[in-house]
Length: 114
Length: 110
Image: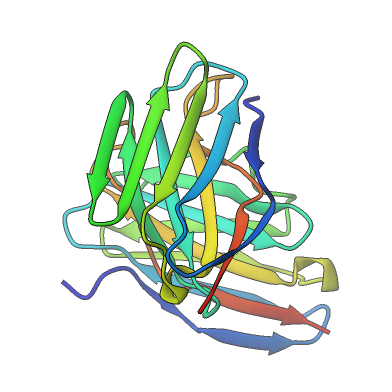
C-alpha cells in the first residue's frame, strides 16, 4: 500500500480564497483524522471520521472550516474564506481502530495564506 | 482535557549517547503514542503502548500507568536519530482524538 496520500503538498494562496486539501487513507482503515500543526500550538486534532461518518469535529476552529468524507477512500478539508492565521501544516492520518490501532500519517499539506 | 508535558524541550547529544525523553499526562488514558517527525516534516509512528514496555531496534518505550508517565529511550544514538519526538495520548478528559505534547527537538552530533 502507498500509505496515506495527501495533496497538495504545498499551497500558497491569498486571504479570502477557498482552499481544499485532500486525503486518501490506507485501504481498509476505518478511521481518518485531520490534524493541524503550527509552531505556537503544535499538533491539534481538527476532526475525525469513522466509516466515513464525522464523529468529533470539536477541534474545527470555526465555521470557515469544513470536512467531508464522501467514501472510504477520500476526504477533503476545506477552508472558505482562508485567513493568514490558517497558515499551518495540515496532516491526514488513518488507522484500523481508534483505541488500539497504529496511526499512519500522510506527508502533510503546507498551507500559506498571504 | 488531558495535559501532556514533554521534557526536555530541546536536547543536543553526542553520537553514541543514551537518550531519554519523558512524557507525563494528567488524566488516565487508553493508549500512548510516540511519534517521530524529521526535518522534512513527515510524521512516523514509533510506538503505541498502553502498558509495560516495547522495543524496536535501538528504541525502547516504557509506560507507567499509575504514575501517568512514559519514557522513550534511544540507545547508541546516531545523527540520523535527529528529529522531533512527539508524545500523544488517547483518551482521558472525554477526548476521543489524540492530545499531543509540544515535542522534544533532538540533535545528535557526530
